Image (cartoon, rainbow, N blue to C red; front, top):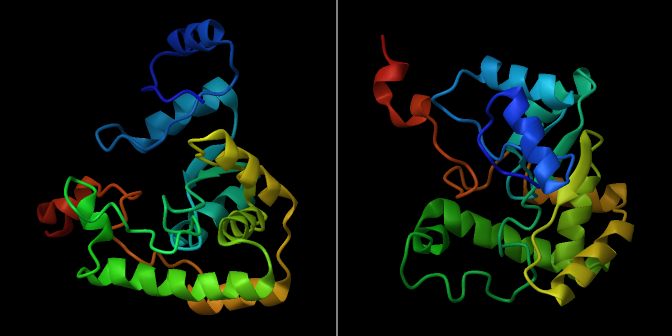
Length: 212
């Protein structure tokens, strides 16, 4: 995977040759660059495709991004199926992250959105125990179940984590389990709108852009 600003086509092709890879990926849109220009360059380079954060806890892409991709025959490569550590199966996902630093607020249970995530994870953990697969496998299988998703990026840090997550490729969720997940987190909903995966863009952070 390559995560670099999109430049001219020639520079991108040179970069791909040096790195001996055929994947050039943009992690997040640049709010200072017109989206049409960005998509135009990516289209010229590699054809249709895209990526986005998608997990049981971050389902906002289901409302527009994934349906649009399906309508235009585009493949979607998603990342963050475990929503960092929240769906990792740990008994306390926030343990060790609450103390200090920029990431502490992401695990501050006094924030309503964070508490909502903790509540959802508690219900999902119980569902996984009932349905059979470990929570990380259930979470990854959920993302793979969407027909617009072509591939899922996982983020293991140790070999044993990689081995475990690869086993999730064989997990298929039945309609009954998917329906239970929908009851816990409705379709198209980001449980915590301020999730760290979602960078606020100028139309959100600058109130002047929302007023005449």
